[in-house]
Length: 192
Ligand SMILES: Nc1nc2c(ncn2[C@@H]2O[C@H](COP(=O)(O)OP(=O)(O)OP(=O)(O)O)[C@@H](O)[C@H]2O)c(=O)[nH]1
Ligand SMILES: [Mg+2]
Image (cartoon, rainbow, N blue to C red):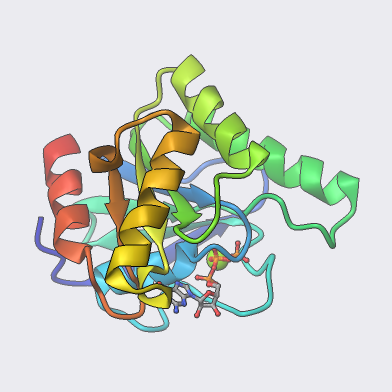
């Protein structure tokens, strides 16, 4: 997959999805893990998806078109953000699950975790949910730049163990340096 260009298309807050006749890849993960940064790294656009040090930034489904509509990336709201009301948490969960159930063009999900942390209960719950509904997903451990090479490798093993997969099944990336980008693009090519 070669990403030549990308642009923001639309944001969805209610239960009416954007539908185009092209494959979609959703980006999921806990709040502040680096989902928006991951999209920016993939598309080589620093400010395409709004990233922020303030968690809970992405509260809608944001659609980005790649190569003039060849593919859509869908930035999902992050889960696990403590500082929101239960009502808001439920609304986001509802929106994420609605999208995962209803999108006709969803090919797979990139489930993003921070390589430095063991998967949280919510990460594992999402993985179970995706398995249960037979929605394919690719695990991505990001922020690799925050660790030395050997520490990142050890941390990747911990992440893989948490998800009960082999370390080869988890893509190690850094959105800051672009490390791992090629493997992510190959994963896309292989699955759309
Ligand atoms: N060092 C480093 N920082 C990163 C990386 N990816 C993201 N960050 C930082 O982590 C913070 C959160 O990144 P976002 O991309 O906004 O995270 P998000 O998952 O979209 O967050 P929400 O939209 O709130 O759910 C920002 O300060 C980013 O600069 C990475 O690979 N390396
Ligand atoms: Mg975001």
